[in-house]
Image 1 (cartoon, rainbow, N blue to C red):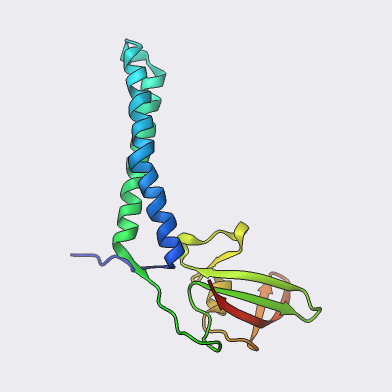
Image 2: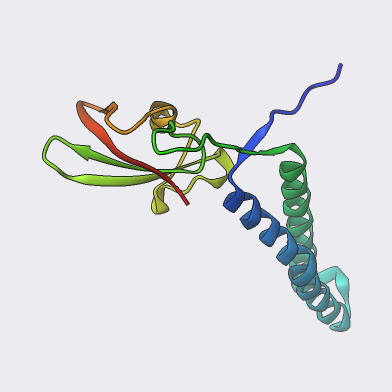
Length: 160
């Protein structure tokens, strides 16, 4: 029974970040770990070498991350967006929202693997992201934040 892998949607910037991490892991990190392992081997008795065990674990973790990134890129689809000033928000959109007090907040709508709340990169699959997808300037967004609800108006949708 064959299980179909889920498509992963990425912005152009997100794909480039992943490609850069993959390049680093393959070209630089592998070399660093090989040198570390060589130094541990040179120390002699491997039966009690914590450095050798650590080098093997780091090498294994690096190879797992490389495989994960390669798998991610093999399933990735680059998002194409509508053009024009009245296009709806899609992956890659920068949205500026304003509440009733005039306070503004900005979000960048991205795929799940690009999300980073500390940089206001919101996944399209998150509750907030799901509410933002398809919104246009002037649309209203109501966010339930636990015990309270906050309403925002979309004041800008732009693309880098």
